[in-house]
Image (cartoon, rainbow, N blue to C red; front, top):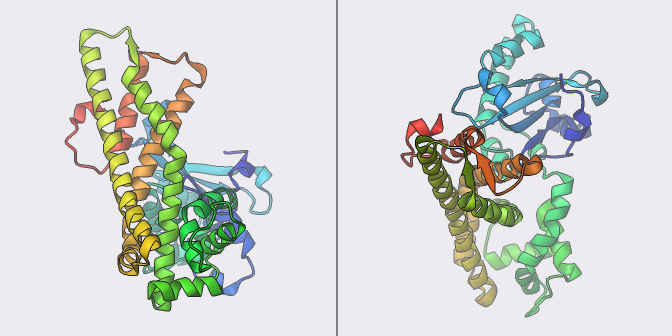
Length: 376
């Protein structure tokens, strides 16, 4: 039983929390919205899904190779979150059979529950709940989902707006027929809000014509552009923490290790740093390519390349989400780990507990030839 559900309310989706409760409540009387739910079962469609870092005491019920799992919390009462909720991990042994029993559906509803169970597995397989990753996966699914489920959480949307305004000041200047526009110009911020909210305005239409796009291409292109800006913002947010993590890992002193333990710990540490740098380089490479084409477009109005990039941008979202979730996991858990410890050194026992978890997170579904013994 999870008793503090109010802290999970996001009003939208974040990379860690998929808040179905808020979205379903907000559009409760919209028939068109009801036609494309995430889940058919009403209680599931008012649940919270959370990407959760596996704690040591939870490993007994979960597959050993998983460092991050998906937690499902179903409120006891849809109308009163203060009553708490029922929680389980999608990946836990016998977890989904327990869910079936808990929901206690009549046999006539079995088909919809099977479809909901399949969707839970799909969501668990995703590296994060980034809104653009979810939208790319489910908007054109054989069971499509209403796009309003993938709205960026208001807190993140507000934090993102100023960053986006700085990033797109040049293209806003083009839209206003000016050579330069200050990054803090109110027009840049207004344009950023219109872009993030997907508003169709006169300036957006002028941009569509500048890019030489049809309306359908423009919708797809703006989705791609918003996604790229979202991931650039998230990457900017994690940069300092990631830099600290790499320095800490490099400089960390291991206490009380035998010769064999020291060799194994140092090998794991070397792989962690290699995988971290490779994930970082993969992200930066694609985003730098976009930035280069974007600057060319702003400098001389060459629309062809930037238009082509925007139209294929959503094809990168799974990789963006996967790399960012792995990097965010190791940096946030590292910060959490040091809250009540003296920085700079770590016992061999603690290193053997936390290091393999980091390595599993960084190498999952990636074939870089990490020795299996180092992941155990």
